[in-house]
Image (cartoon, rainbow, N blue to C red; front, side, top):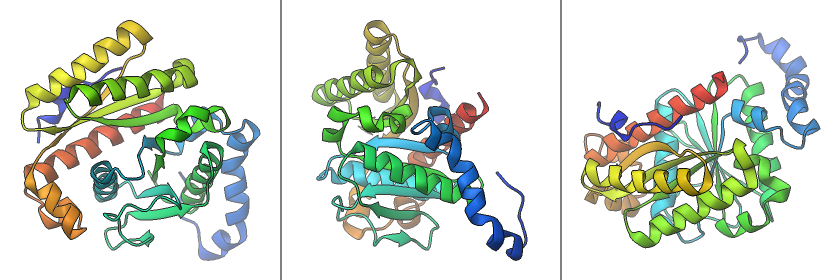
Length: 275
């Protein structure tokens, strides 16, 4: 079910002893991973493990900033988040690989295509679940070019987040991505869109409604709104400072809108897992 953009307006496993954990961790991971591996990456298992794919170009500094800041905000809201990225991709706005002081983690993986990236991301999600990290999430950065050969790793594209500005060229590009993702995933693909680069809610609403209406009419799919990201100077300062917006400018409109996007995404992840 699609979400109303107006929502943004208001502002697996009991803990075991160390001995039991040490003895059973491999078995736990195998048990969690088995259903997915038997089915080449079962779609429902991927969703339950909290795997969300985000198309991201190698030089897309702005979206890279959004992804990392989103991971930080999701972690702050009780969902420890790992950003999985092909090792060849290293935007300058990201921190050094590993878990940061804020709790979010950046994890480069060896991947030469979508299949490699899909398997690596599933391994990460399984490990987080077996390590008893409740509500752990994995944001997977996918080079857009890899989507052209999606058959090997299509399972990872069952929950996708897209970013679009109100610019006509970006709306067309976002619709084209949604169309391709829908074709690859048929009726099982969940696509959410966050509108960025806006100052007014009305502008974001019009942009999302245009995308959602076109997708519904021509593709028969329903897009979900993951809110909006305010275009504010603090975003660009965060890029230069390489610090999360919510840490460096916590009271800014940009930080508040990021928190709302994180909440909308986590709410949707929870509803998907409950279905």
